[in-house]
Amino acid sequence: MKVAIYGQYYQNSTEPIINDIFVFFNRNNVEMIIESHFLLMLNERKIVEKKYKTFTSHTELDSSFDMLISIGGDGTILRAATLVRDSGIPILGINAGRLGFLASVQKENISTFMQFVIDKKYTISKRALLSLTCSPPNESIEEINFAMNEITVSRKDTTSMITIDTYLNDEFLNSYWADGLIISTPTGSTGYSLSCGGPILTPDVKSLVITPIAPHNLTARPLVVPDETEIRLKVSGREENYLVSLDSRVTSIKNESILILKKTPFQIYMVEIPEETFLKTLRNKLLWGEDKRN
Ligand SMILES: NC(=O)c1ccc[n+]([C@@H]2O[C@H](COP(=O)([O-])OP(=O)(O)OC[C@H]3O[C@@H](n4cnc5c(N)ncnc54)[C@H](O)[C@@H]3O)[C@@H](O)[C@H]2O)c1
Ligand SMILES: Nc1ncnc2c1ncn2[C@@H]1O[C@H](COP(=O)(O)OP(=O)(O)OP(=O)(O)O)[C@@H](O)[C@H]1O
Image (cartoon, rainbow, N blue to C red):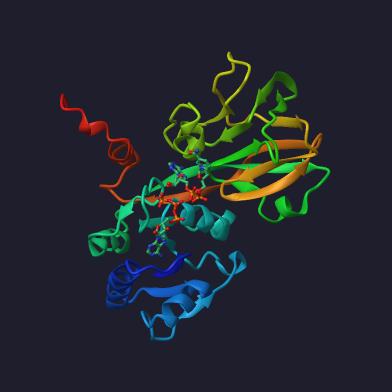
């Protein structure tokens, strides 16, 4: 078995996690290829001294890898998705962070979870992504033009609202007067969209959610549309530019540019360990079991 290991940060809590993973995988003859910046951090702190092979970019992650293990929070998983892209390599998230909605495996009992991995006792949860094309083209979007959570347009350098003309499959939907508009995948429905009143979708639902951010048309409400829908946006406002974000990545776009959002032809495969399902994560993170009547 061959796995890629990825993390963005080093903290004191990293050491026991790394120790648990490395001891277990070395004992079970699992080959580990470590992202080069992460390995450098581990080498500098003398957490890892043995020599390991490294990778630096998505081009080195080919079908010979069985899995990518992401050590961190949800932000780290979102970055991990930009590494695996359309390679089909499943991602397993070990939650070293705070909320850990996507990075569902808790850092305690790592060896129990890794045994599931070695015994192939896991399922794959396929996650739909959204792609963005911009006309006229925008260089910073072209490099990584997809999002696993959501694509958001929002106002920039002003308190003044923006107007977002929105078309679904070429049919006019609405002009939102708002701070912004979120187009969310099912995965992203528990992120920014939820904070703005959007519904939660289970990851396998074949839909997208269009959620306005603080709309001044008071009747504007989150809308669920089929994930085959092509969504076209045109933004205008008092400033010359507005912001577009794809998950954690942000760029500035000129007003009147045309944005086309579509489901990507590929999906991200998330590893789901038997006892760490989406529904369990939902209950735990949203504290649904805390009601005394349960
Ligand atoms: N007001 C908000 O709720 C708000 C605002 C901006 C961005 N976000 C979310 O943050 C994401 C980017 O993450 P970051 O680490 O760069 O920013 P960050 O450090 O501000 O973290 C944002 C929080 O969102 C949580 N999160 C991310 N994806 C999630 C998901 N699919 N389900 C549930 N919670 C999720 C993370 O655990 C973290 O606690 C965006 O994709 C967006 O979904 C949320
Ligand atoms: N490799 C790591 N080792 C130890 N702690 C980590 C590591 N990676 C992340 N963390 C902890 O998790 C925090 C959040 O990480 P990250 O940016 O990946 O997630 P996030 O999007 O903020 O989500 P969450 O709310 O789930 O933590 C970091 O500030 C840090 O405290």
